[in-house]
Structures are given as structure tokens and as C-alpha cells.
Amino acid sequence: MLTQTELKQNVAQAAVQYVLPFLTPETILGVGTGSTVDIFIDSLAPHTSRFRGAVSSSERSSARMAALGIQVFDLNDVQAMPFYVDGADEIDRGLSMIKGGGGALTREKIVASVADQFVCIVDESKQVDHLGRFPLPVEVIPMARESVSRQLAQLGGKPSLRSGIVTDNGCQILDVSGLSISQPAQLESRINNIPGVVSCGLFAIAGADVVLVSTQGGVRQLKKNAS
Ligand SMILES: O=C[C@H](O)[C@H](O)[C@H](O)COP(=O)(O)O
Image (cartoon, rainbow, N blue to C red; front, side):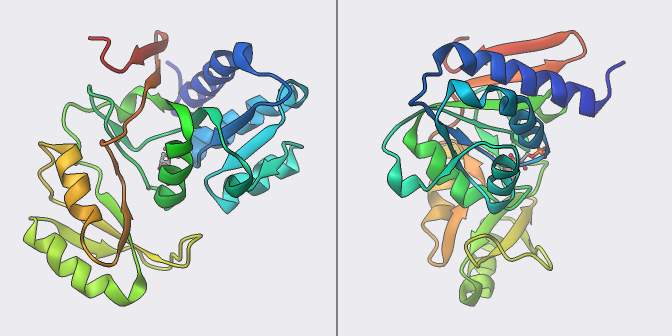
């Protein structure tokens, strides 16, 4: 029986093998945030001669990449990326995700929007039939914390301030439990439109293009619209 760490190691290595054939000395990769991505960064580091560098979705990943010799670029200096590789807290069959357990959701959504392909790397515990058991992270401008909370409550959610956390953008996170997420893209749009919301952790309007799922039987690859 593989442990969750071993499952993460397997999917991180599979992601490296997935991107490796496409890398050129000019390639810049998009790199996400989290414990699975940490292992992906470690697995990517021996291949630094095969690509130019990466754009990161967090100070945490930037520091890890810099320490391992991966050149980190500012997104403003990059026009295209073939891949954005990141984990997820939940992913459904339509490849919509909940992200932001590590608080990096806004930068993740920004960097992912520039990449051609979102490659989601998860272990099988993250696969769900319906999103929403994992509380939905919503990044908010601090002065709007209470007004946004009231509007989220009107949507049926129970917002809870993530204590002791200031995001890389100087904002706060509300973790919203109890939401019924039957239409993820519509809910994403609705929450994004609440004044004071920086972004919400639903990645459904633009979900993953490919998901690599680490299981006890190996790493499986699922593609958007493949079934
Ligand atoms: O903000 C964090 C990200 O959305 C992560 O991708 C997500 O929380 C999954 O992280 P982990 O790989 O540690 O489960």
C-alpha cells in the first residue's frame, strides 16, 4: 500500500515525464503551489538545462525553485507558457477544481490563465463526484471581509476567516463550507462578482485540461472532454 507521500511522488514524477518531451531551452513553465507541487519542483530541478525557467504562483514556490537553481521569471516578462502544473484540493469528473488550500488561489488563477495547458497533479483522494466537501477558499480585500461574508451566507455558505494568514497579495482568506456546488462555473462567476472578492478557489470556468491521478495501481491520465 503506497502512502499519500509516495502517491504524490509518483504523480510529480509523471508530470515531469509529461512535460519533458516538449521542453526547449526557451521554454518557461508555470508552476503552482502546495505539497504535491513541492515534490514536482524537486523532480524538475535535475532537468534545468532542458528549459529556461518558470513563473511561480507563490513566494513559497519561488523560493523553492530559486534554491534548486530554477530561474524564476516575473509574469510581466513572459508572454506564453506551454504548461501550468499545479495540484488541487478537489477535482470532479468535468475537471473543475477547488483550489486554495495553501492560500495561493489568486496567483494560481492568473498564471494558469496565461498557460496553454493546465496539468493538474493529484492523488486519488482529491477526486470527487461533487465539489464542496472541501471548504471553498475565497480571497478578499480585508476591508470587505464582513460584507463579502454576508453575501456568501446569502448563497448558503458558512464563511470562516482563515486565521493568521495574509496572502502574498496582502489579503485574507474566507473558507466557505456548506455551499451546494451543482453548477461550479456559475457559482465561480457569481462569487467573483461580489465587490471585495479578489478571486475564489473554484477553477471551473477554466478548469484543468489534463489531470494526472496517482492511484495504488499507477498514475492515470484524464483529459478534458475525453469521456
Ligand atoms: O493554494 C494552494 C493550491 O491550490 C494547492 O494546489 C492545493 O491546496 C493542493 O495542495 P496539496 O498538493 O498540498 O494538496
